[in-house]
Length: 245
Ligand SMILES: Nc1ncnc2c1ncn2[C@@H]1O[C@H](COP(=O)(O)OP(=O)(O)OP(=O)(O)O)[C@@H](O)[C@H]1O
Ligand SMILES: [Mg+2]
Image 1 (cartoon, rainbow, N blue to C red):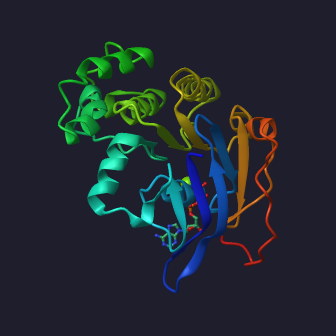
Image 2: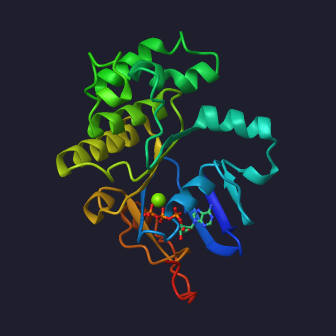
Image 3: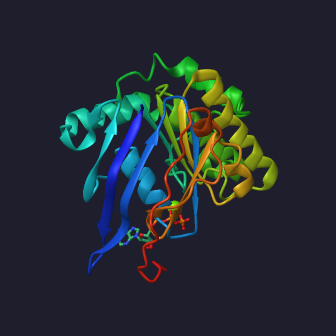
């Protein structure tokens, strides 16, 4: 079992309110999981908690048997750099750095910029960005930026790839390209992929779908991977908070 969330919750704001509450779920190694739900339902928040980028207010996240809450800041930093790839909803590429420098940024942090340079070029080539390595982000299209952000997330060969609306701003053709890339990484490299999406068609490309409603886990829509294991995510009792939006 790769990632286990035990009744996790997140309280934010003033006055504090429950952005997520009582979310229990499991993600298996090598699984491709999609997370859907309305805007404001807590999808990004959940992804941040599961990926160690943010800390829970209640409950616990365990990755490969390690409780994230028990890890030191140094251990967390190392874990994120080595094991976690994250594609942000608004890609967060550094505007003053070229494409190749952006891809290499996580490697630079790890002191491995030179040893990973050839791989960075491979990734650019694989994602149709060969010949654009010296471009600045503003000189690339939306689809190219999203593929560049994925290349950056993969430079350290992470075990887990978290993608927050990687197709959100793309047309259908580019969206399909990006989902195809995530699927390929999952199948070819065995990377565990968690993808947030608004698009039910893209969500269906995953092995299993989970749905968030109002900060709580809803019913699993389909469960290809899970049914193979005789298991589905349990739906939980509806929680009436009067809506979060
Ligand atoms: N720092 C914060 N302080 C207070 N409320 C927050 C904070 N961050 C997020 N929220 C609220 O938490 C809820 C969930 O936010 P989140 O970004 O996880 O939603 P989402 O499902 O990813 O939405 P979208 O599909 O629009 O990206 C929203 O109602 C949002 O306003
Ligand atoms: Mg979001």
